Amino acid sequence: MGDRLEVIEKKKQKGNSVKKQINDFSIFEEIWHAITHGFGLFISTFGFGVLFTLAVMSGDLQKIWTSVVFGLGLLTMYGASTLYHAIPHYRMKYFLQIFDHAAIYILIASTYTPVVVLGVQGLFGWVLLGTVWFLAVRFFTTLAFFY
Image 1 (cartoon, rainbow, N blue to C red):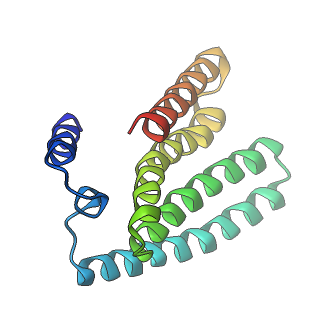
Image 2 (image 1 turned 135 degrees about the horizontal axis):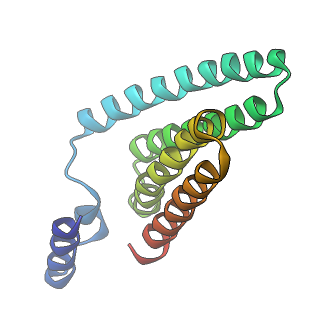
């Protein structure tokens, strides 16, 4: 990550435009990324529906809310990534790239949520979950405001 920031700083010093700072993907690569990440979004939507239905059928409130947290994390990450690769407008792409990278931290925390709540449990589980979410929000906001 530090190397990437150094490259961006050097490009800024040379006066390169935002267009050059975003990425070096070809049009073909961007289209392919948008398609594959869009497919991931589609599969995640389907999987979220199945997971949520099974959780509701179990009647367990912890399974229900943790499946929602996990599903929303998947949809956020794949949605951000699909938009980032699909939208060619450079100024919008700059912000979408930041959100795309930051959304990964939300996915990590949302993946921990059902595992810790349903599997680890107890005080250690809640401390672990709180720590993971604290770090995820911290890294998300760091990327969003200081990238």
